[in-house]
Image (cartoon, rainbow, N blue to C red; front, side):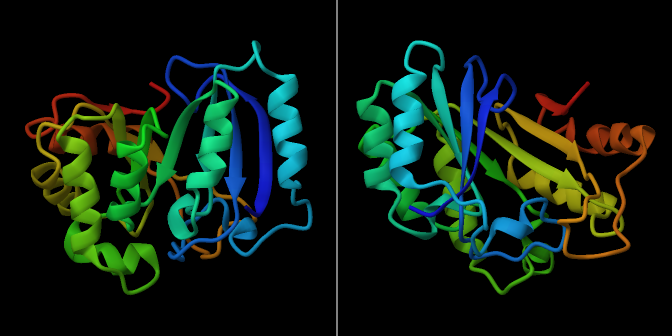
Length: 226
């Protein structure tokens, strides 16, 4: 595994757990609003895999879990990496864009993941524009449907970006993910790593209005940070 970064402690990324977050290099998407674009193809500060596992050995009994993020962790064969994390007694949270449903299901069947956070880029019709590449929306729908079945704890989340998202996008998302147990709106944050220029966060009142569009379909929708 190419480890592009390591956040040694987080109280926010893994619900109910004190965790670390490991960022794996590589992604099949090129979202124009990506906060981690600078690590998608690697990083000058990459962490050696054995160094990472030595860190986990030292933190046993202090950390409860490991968030495996990216990039997109499922681009490669992440199963051996997760097995090593599991062998040390850690719970595993996986961040994914949902483009690899077969891999997601296989990891779940093997018991290698405890929680999944799936990014929802936009309404199905506008997915390629927000993903930055041509993508198979049916595979993304398959991953979402698998999570909606409820065999794994999960959350869906959308980074809300002006002017890329329109109010009607969220109506379509609500219809698509109707009844989801957890769906979060998270506001865009500008940074030097973001590839596209001219993007902006929504005002708090605008996010509240977006939430109101989703509530008829997803009663558990929340704005992250509220």
